[in-house]
Image (cartoon, rainbow, N blue to C red; front, side, top):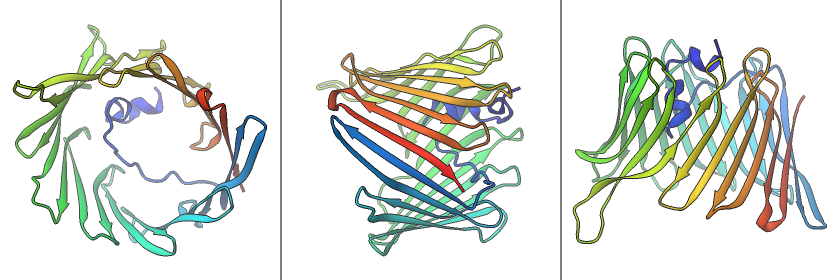
Length: 296
């Protein structure tokens, strides 16, 4: 059984934009350096774009992002005040900009994420709720201070099948993800996302915004997904390849706009939560961006 199948919420992670924010995977390294090469025609720029320092337990301690001139753009400082908590402080231009406090349950699932804007004020709180078998059933999204109502995401399950994700803004319906399955299968063959739109002179109604059509290998692992964005005439094609341990190690993403290839990305991992390399090509701009990950 693949690692995706062991997670009761793998369908949520694969086919929706809900961020379940798993715990940071521990690394057997003291530092990571990401080197970026940008090639445009005859011009090439090379610089260290990211640096990650790990603590003694292999958890992220400090993450720094750099620009092409080696200037520090921003920094994320990680702390772990308790076994089930993860704290992140974002620093931009030497000033504290944002703070996250993330709390997990005993199964390692996120139960709450609190973001504080340290410059503009305000606080966003997302709370996650699960059923007795560990499936996500509700997300509550609150913004303070705000006169706007609380947002909700409700998830309907039938055994291992995720049937529908409903998005509410207060009492008002905002959108739905609807899942279709082949008979006898727990793997969705179609995922349609509907959003509430208002046509001129007509009452608001649900309209299909994007459509996913995933495919799987004989072991039930996702190997291809096509996401068609009907409102913007764009499309994304995703592929995944697996190693002998049934862990995804190679990913591609091709984005098309009005039928033309806009970007082409390939990411390679080592099967142990480590990215090895990532290459993005933008044909219209004749740009190639290559990122190489070096664990020290």
